[in-house]
Amino acid sequence: MANYDKVLVLDIFNRFDLEIKAGRSGIKREITVSDIKRPGIELAGFWKHFVPERANLIGRTEMSFLRALEADLLKKRIDEYVAYNPVCIIVARGEKIPDYLLKRADESGIPVLLTNISTTRFSSMLLNYLEEKLAPVRVIHGVLVDIYGIGVLIRGESGIGKSETAIELVKRGHRLVADDIIEIKKIGELRLAGSAPENSRYFLEMRGIGIINVKTLFGAGAVKNESPINLTIKLERWDENNEYERLGIDTRKTTIMDLDIDEIIIPVKPGRNLALVLEVAAMNYRMKSMGYNAAVDFTENIMRR
Image (cartoon, rainbow, N blue to C red; front, side, top):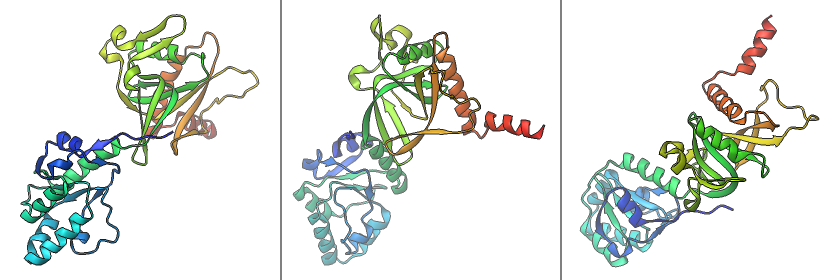
């Protein structure tokens, strides 16, 4: 089930070192959507599709428009704006804010914040921050490791050897992200990131030994707090009746939070070095991402001959 982190205006204030100009009483207002609103057309009098739940960002263009209005019309527009109760107002480029807007925002408890960063740059920074913080989260079982910079999600039935494979990978210089319980965030529309819950971070369960702290045993370089999920490895017990992939031409996908992720099924039997197999899988995935597919190259060589 998906859930979301909570973002307060105070979090944005602290994260970007902003200056508060008015509405300090509303500094703990909660922001629930990652979209940002540039209220240009609204300040011109069109309020039909205004969404007050979005953080409002005002730049030089909007401020120039407001300063050009006659005093009575300026007050009317600001009164309309404040009546819609935007969750917060952030003014970019250090622009001078009309005194009447500060007065009305103070009365209504609407935080007005100021930054010297340009509007476009701050918009990008704020959007990235909110998308990450408010990304939908799903909890799944498995092991997540970083292999050569590739986030590999290992899945399979209980007792098949996921944690033991992760430890072997750590010994070979790779990094553990999460064991057993993985919190997956969908960031934007194209990216998944996984991490361990705060209370189980760096811990791993090995049957027969118990719980170990990977960071304590192997050092800080053996763990990672978060990783993108690029590739899924499904471990299953070797079945002689199954025909497993031999060439790797066909690409298999699995769906996580409506995103298709490359998946490889690895058959498990005694004596097979799973850590080595996963290393090769990660390197091969990286080569495919760079445009080289060994299976296609092999097939073309055969066809040429």
